[in-house]
Amino acid sequence: MKRILVIGGSRYFGRTLVTRVRDAGHEVTVLNRGSGSPPPGAGHLVADRDDEERLREVLGPRDFDVVVDQVCYTPHQAAVARRVFAGRTGRYVMTSTMEVYDPATLPAPVPAAGSAPVPAAGSVPFPGRVAVAVPAPVGEESLRPLLRDPAGGARRDADPAYAYAEGKRQAEAVFLHEPPFPYVSVRTAHVLGGGRAEFTGRLAHYVERIGSGSPVDVHEAPYATSFIHHHEIAAFLHWTAEATFTGPVNAASHEAHDVRALCRTVEARLGRRARLRTVPAGAPASPFSFDRPYAMDNGRATALGFRFGRVGDWLPEAVDETARGA
Image (tube, rainbow, N blue to C red; front, side, top):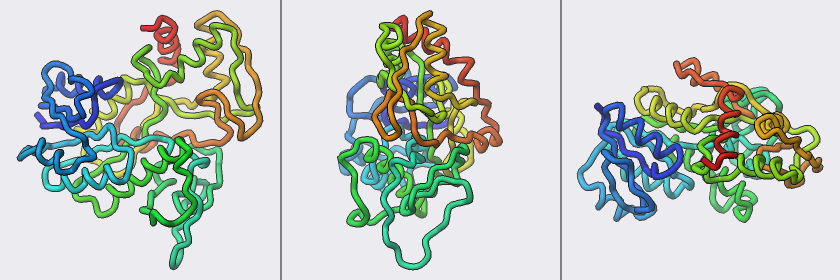
């Protein structure tokens, strides 16, 4: 039995993760701001993770075998966690995102003394380099986040997509710099399934618009992207918590689908034809319509022993759940 702390974990796949860990016989505790109660059988601590003094007070003398951090979005939050949990956890798992690879959100080049690191051939460059998009699925080695000078480079924090992706990149960089504990960043694909529990509404966008005959805005030649079922990412995080490997790892179901393939699945389940409206490259489009490639390679996790499902096997039921409002 392990003592596992989940930071966040009050909704969607975080709640499923807590339930899985509990049912596996581990002692699980949820730490959040009091926004939701954990499933029965899980402990509950209430604190704002940004408040280091309060966080230390609430944790008291507790230590853990594993911390799974579901809600780390900024380098500040990572720095607080790094200080607070140093010496009190044997393993730290941060839930990151595939958006860290998005060429559209990579920071502007930052002048650096000496030679700059060069990414592997055919990869997406990491922060501090000019982004060059390539169609090959990206592996973990394609991005090695570097801590940046907050005063350096062009800032685009007003752009929510940039702020989110760069926040995750910088949070990873804080943990990866001389980590005080064994550390894993799980770069998750787009999570789907669960009906109303899928609070982003991205799959619902397609079900509602195709069902009502409203136009769906897509790029002329959209690139494929990576997806994962909400139960599968909970299983992956549980598996990662019990494993011993470290470093970044991609979590994505087999098969990358583009937005047109997604629409075809929705069409088949609803019995309605989608009205696709083409938009130019760079223009706003529907969720999951991408004019640049950064689908993920899940080879590392597969080689380590995790068995992913296929998008085509679970997506139809995910569409049905959304259509039912389940």
